[in-house]
Amino acid sequence: MKKLITLLFTFALAFTLSMPVFAQEAGATEGQTQEATKASKKSHHKAAKTKKAKKAKKEKKEKKSEEAPPQQ
Image 1: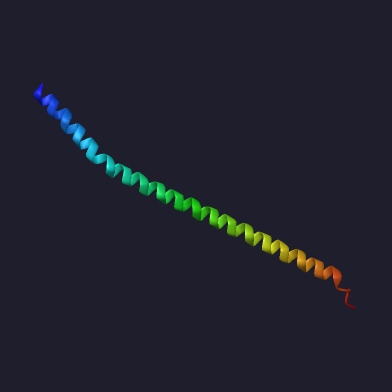
Image 2: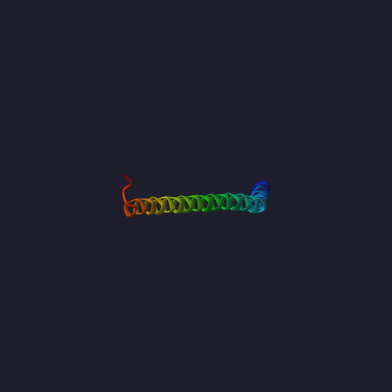
């Protein structure tokens, strides 16, 4: 009986001491995930801006060519 109580106490002590280590690892993984999400959003936003700029430039060029009289 005494061995069983000692084993239970040892397990409880080891478990409580290891919990902060697991919490730190989970926090680091969560931080990496958030960074990856931010980077993904940033690249998507940048790509959208680039597409809009290209589209606006193309429209401007087309408008300019329509306004110009045909050359002979």
